[in-house]
Image (cartoon, rainbow, N blue to C red):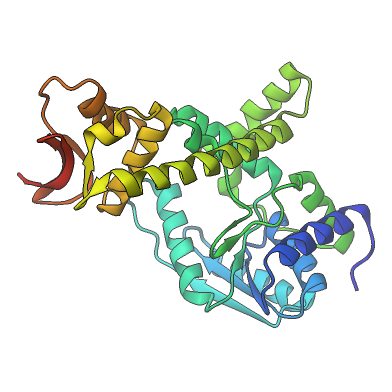
Length: 320
């Protein structure tokens, strides 16, 4: 039985709400041994019958294997049905932070079976994510933040502050693992956490993180309505895989670019940016005979290119 402290009750309520909205017979927990995932594990064990812990050992630091084994032991002590340690090899693509994330999620996907994976992301993580998206300047979608459930990834703690998970560990007598990467100023997210958000809280009088999280939620709700409208338009203006310019050009810009985005993704495009969408939109609304627009998703020998031909936008490969 968990002690009924305010912090643990908040965590249990958050997990209970998530499970009520997304009922599963069993769930997996991505356990790092840090405060957020430890507190989530304890709350999940108290709220559902079968919890499996998956501990990913990135093998980036000396002694990482021992840290992973300790986390797995704690998971069993908390009541997890199983606790599995998965060692991964982290590549170099995109930098160490991105490569570690890719390796971690790949390992979790393989180990989870049919269960959703609960992640210990908190409201503070959500605020950091929104600020990172804002810096990219890629439109409203880039500051939607994280969803509570983006299958198979579940995030029950998005309304819970990081201070609450730390207090829960104190209440349980657990000493969480402190990842040295979480205090490394070379990582942008660390500087947001330790410098930018505290400064914003000071300058703006507090409650900045909850305000950013609320903004993300409102934008996701608005975006869902616009996306549904764009899907309906796409069904009308797509013919034989192409977009009919005259049928789309009169729609509002926000809907046009959403239609373009879905159409490109359906055609195999990747890593789309606001610059891509605006350049392709210009093939309709600012047509002056310009050439095609290359987008990510091609191969080493062929670019994926959108062009305008005979009143249609077409997507094809341009051999280089």
